[in-house]
Amino acid sequence: MPENGVWQQIWSLNIPPKIRHFLWRAYRESLPTKKNLQSRHIPVDPCCSECLNADEDAIHSIWGCQVLTPLWAKTGHFHALQALQFSSFGELLKEVLNKLDEHHQLIFAVQAWLVWFRRNKGRVENQWDDLDSLGIRASIVIQDHLLHHSKSESTTLPSPITHWQPPDRGTWKINFDGAMRKDIGAAGVGVVVRNHQGHTVATYTERFHLPQTPAIIEALAARAAVHLALELKLDQVSFEGDSEIIIKALQSIEANFTSYGHIIEETQDKSKFLQSCSFQHTRHSANNVAH
Ligand SMILES: [Zn+2]
Image 1 (spheres, helix red, strand yellow):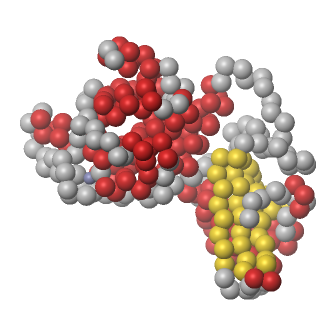
Image 2 (image 1 turned 90 degrees about the vertical axis):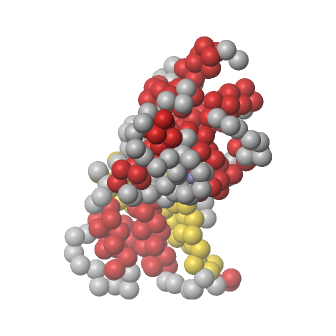
Image 3 (image 1 turned 180 degrees about the horizontal axis):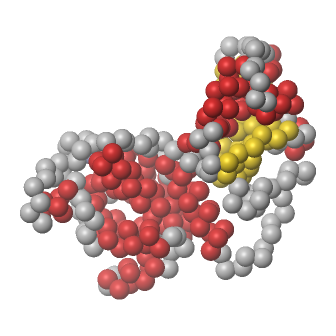
């Protein structure tokens, strides 16, 4: 494939321009990797700061480093590519652009960019972000870009759930719910993040083995919802739950002396890290959450 073919393929990807630039630079081996810095006679140890096992070039820092293996293995299409050997990022990118469908090309591009971004942040701030949420963050970047840059903006999709009301554009809606299964002695919480078109972009579930009271489970569900919003780095969020007692507690500024008071207070404290958020009560039928 001639180089201008790759350039055109990169530029036709429906992703933010900064990610296209990143891909092109990675393809041309012009990212400021340690190996590149060394080849420019900058005194730096070319060894990867994370695995200490290989030189840090583009293919290693974005794809081959062993700390990234579980992340790329999560998606079947990428897992299959892991069995192959690529001597450069360019070789890998050509394989992705020629063999994978458009959806997976987008995921690859955004995930690669997030991996590179994380590595730079880690090196500069000496703080290495968790890799677990990176796949979800990639799908949010893609969704967000498609929403704001789709050619036919007028298409309003019907809400997938009766009575569920989508949030305003630019706001995420997070529904949370707790459930108890006394018969099996387990309880669980479920959280769903949706955008203003009603598309689900992330979900979270957690099970508890010890029996809890329904109110505690609902409070734990609220806390899980706020944690997920922070982990995904969302800014404006509308939280919805169907437990009136928990929503009222979350809205209140009074100290809460109930058995779940500490969970409410922790949830309120954490929610202050969001740019803006609200807690609303909704009927059970509108609070469709996967358990
Ligand atoms: Zn490494």
